[in-house]
Image 1 (cartoon, one colour):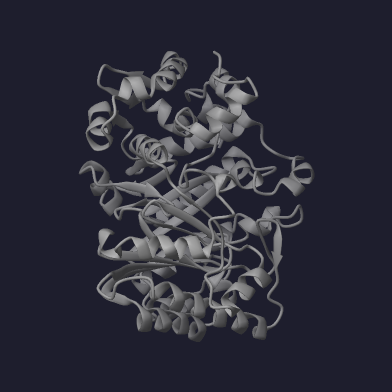
Image 2: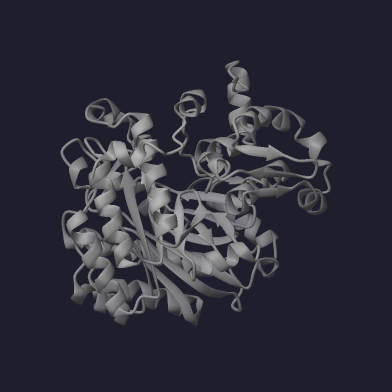
Length: 464
């Protein structure tokens, strides 16, 4: 396969890449954690919940259980589980946190989704996984038809382990390499478990998982286009429900201490974007629908139907058919959202344990979104979910005059319109097909915190 022949007709606009750069912020979280308030602790969180009737929220919850990897770097704090006793200790405190959170909600609020994030499959036995699920079902009202997600490291997946997970109740799998948070120069070449990805998909299908999402990284050091496409085509042939393309530079921004060590062998920015553009064509030809943010779903997937019907949401868990307003997250470094409140637990294990030892939720910092935060988040979500933003819909819901409220932003968007990434109409903003690959950049225009920072540094707006 000759990559020069493949890429010769692709609309890879080098000038666009150089003009705007290609940002990978996906705005699952707005505002970002750097703007959270350390004074907003567990007491403030529980006080807010006690002051607001929880029936105000949806009659369902999504529980996110974070299990750190063995030896993983969590926000640059080392998490080490060297012995099984360390794992049992973590689970002891995790279950205590589950109990504390459960006390804050009305008995009739149901759990419809449970999501095990991180290294659950890496370090927990099937008995330990079942123990956590049992603890949740004892304390929360969990529906029988719940969605039970688990992140799967394909290097560890076997037909037997998939059947075990299915027997434990798991029915949704997200597959990738769970080594994202422990990247080192020595381990970078193990990020793409090509020899296990397709067999793991087949094993999950045989076990009866109803949703299988694959995450495929592009832009790895020394990665060549033809090798990337070979892997992608094999994955497409396996027919998972969803495929998400992730740029390695996105993960690298979380690993600043190692950035210098990992630069050698990177593909150029243009080459990485070319990989993405070629892959998008391959996926479209195979019948996958681009939901947005480089996530592709088979045409019969529930996300495709939700997007078509205008009921697609985007938040901390990515694209979902469930509003991202009731995410109860437990575990070290876990991030949750309840109504307008965003919170993150301590990233340090000892701090996490100390708080729970005193029967306090281990919340490190939080943020209660202002009216402006909510308006801007809704704008970003509309662009990310539907590529169209109706001024009237925002004005009706928030009682603002859109053109007046966002006058500076609309002015800045002219640069993107001139570049062919969006169209500014009298009553709406429409992101073009080419602009869908730049929607992160477009959303940055509406980021008030980033705007303020750039204005202070006198480098905003972006000039053509």
